[in-house]
Image (cartoon, rainbow, N blue to C red; front, side):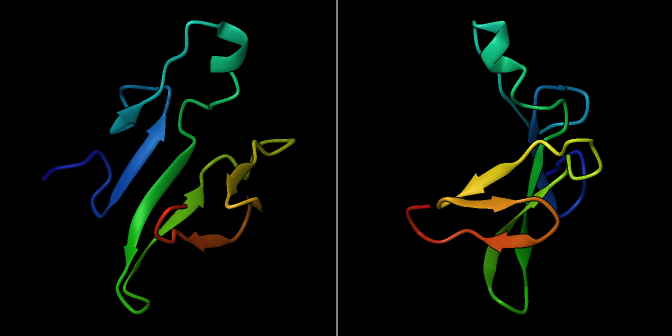
Amino acid sequence: DQTKQAGTIRIGRDSERCDLVLHHPDRNIERTVSGLHIELFWNEVAQRIYVRNLTRDRIPPNPVLVDGQTVIDQEIAIAENS
């Protein structure tokens, strides 16, 4: 299927740039998710899905957590049941 960025699934609050849009009725909670927050992509070599933080250029970066590990600059594999 088509996604907004070929080869990835982008997640955040901005419906123009994201494939999966997150909303929350509490504006303070919703603001913890950036307009363009993360993307998931298939790593052909590792044969796994990875996550990449798209807010890493922000000061301070808006961290992403995967299994308790903070993702800022690195890409992290998503394990089953993550």
